[in-house]
Length: 287
Image (cartoon, rainbow, N blue to C red; front, side, top):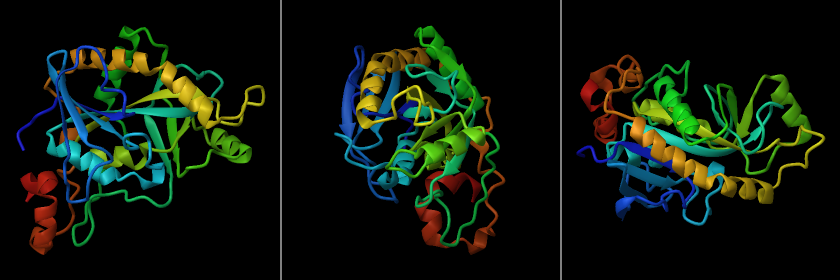
């Protein structure tokens, strides 16, 4: 498919309702892994084409463990998106990362259990290298956009993804802190891994909504608290997206675009034709 968008944003269903978004269209895409969480909204912002995807569906009806992450990422790849910004509500596991602030993390810890984590398998083996799960270049641009928008932003920290949908027990929260985790959420894994398999740059704008349950002087996290604090930051998120769009150019100095170059280990003549056809968008240039 001809490259159509410069940046994809995965987040809530209301993000694309922003001033200045023009030529808006809504499309439904069918991928080899099924349909994404919601129709994709594409528009022009700051002269650039941007795609928005509601991770949990319109009206937030899909649980974190039920999200079809493979379809979501593959659909954005079909649109030609090379960069993905994930907007994620999260809990802080550090005193110095306070509710209302934003974190652009640099590491990820997967504590989920029941999710599809790869596009590969069924006769095609690929081992992606992922020492740095978030694109350093896009993360740097995103952090700069946060500052431009006037947000309090922290750069760095490890994001642990739990299965959910429940929040942590106090014992779990304290264990995660003892492990050196900085943030906790339910959706960044396997989204980041799939984006790298698709050779897309991926960065997270983590909005801190609470202190999880470890902080004895703060009230324990609730849905009402998360929604209240996330809604407070929605206008900031929109400003950050606009600022990020102005900073992004076509060049990608990072290695994300070549992530599969040495990852496919299966002998080419032993890859089932069905898998070659199914994943041609990802692996075609390496066959």
